[in-house]
Amino acid sequence: MKPGARLMKHFLQFRDLRAEEYAYLFARTAAIKQRFKNYEKYTPLTDRTLAMIFEKASTRTRVSFEAGMYQMGGSVVHLTTGDSQLGRAEPVEDSARVISRMVDLVMIRTFEQTKIERFAAHSRVPVINGLTNEYHPCQILADIFTFIEHRGSIEGRTVAWVGDGNNMANTWVQAADILGFTLHVSTPRGYGIDAAVAGAHRPDCVKTFSDPLEACRGAHLVTTDVWTSMGFEAENEARLEAFAQWCVDARLMAAAQPDALFMHCLPAHRGQEVAAEVIDGPQSVVWDEAENRLHVQKALMEYLVLGRIG
Ligand code: CP
Ligand code: NVA
Image (cartoon, rainbow, N blue to C red):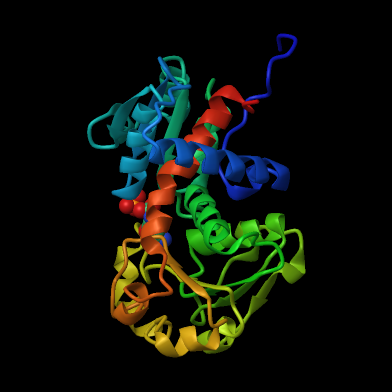
């Protein structure tokens, strides 16, 4: 490594960064967002290129990364399994070697976490997880930034997770572990969080409840997600039955703190995991949460490509 050169970092799961790096990123996000709101041009990634590889559908992730990269002066290449050799069984290692010689940053949305890890292991440039079956770290980055904007530090607070022990839930566990808050989790039997996948070091950062109402009791933030994640569609019918009681409605919100926030990564299904009265109600911050994907990812891309600014 050249003297003064930085160690390349990937963002494959939430635990890839430390608490003090998150503090930096949240401060940086606030500054970048403020400039954007003031229509101030900020183009630190001029002449840089982001490759975005999507093996699953997306609205927010696609728009936020693509718009964010253009706003910072860079450009994007959009690839899907269907329109690239990735869908014709070119080894992921070979794809990584080739793509990473041509761009400065790669974002991947795919199925197994091992696939993104194999890509990163053969990449010359930083790789960002835009969602895998196991984790969704960019979303939790946005969620925690949104909490901080509305309520201040998340340290010492309680977040209630109601629903599937999925990629979002695993990532909340890692965030609780690193950032020092408590996660209350309630999932239907058989759909719990796999502790080995979530991988928390601080065992008391997660408390599990069979009753979703008990999980919400005293929470500062209540959050949920779809009952059936992408890639699990074959289980849809069984899940509709198993999750029927895991709907965040006014009764559950009433058990939380009076000023508790409601979040959902979206897309949402009103009448399934969340009642319309909650997602469209006064405690919901889902639109801020979605917008903040743009701002946190701009800070993240800047950090991974250029390191700390200032
Ligand atoms: N929340 C989220 O990642 O949304 P998309 O699937 O639309 O990207
Ligand atoms: N858990 C959901 C999140 C979608 C953004 C999924 O993986 O489909």
